[in-house]
Amino acid sequence: MAAPQQPRHLLLGFTAAQLISTLGTPALQIREGSSLKLQFRSSGCVLDAYLYPSAGGPPKVTYVDARLPSGADTDQAACISALGVHS
Image (cartoon, rainbow, N blue to C red; front, side, top):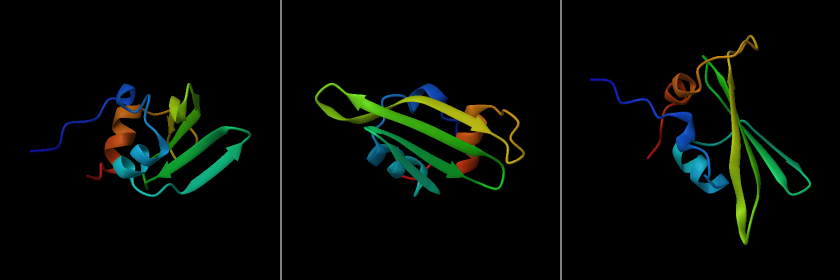
């Protein structure tokens, strides 16, 4: 039986540490001012998570984008599933 897919809204509010714990080591990290972009890749998709400062705490995910390696949009839940969820 396949593991249930994790909907993209479950990543919103995650810290960088929580993302890494869930999706593994990011392929790319870009800091721009106080914001952070973490990119996760699999053979089937690319997922970008954008983290911005939160009141009194570490930056948190406010937006997630998923695409195929070709650049075409793809379903975010399917991409999260393709990345594999670590625990």
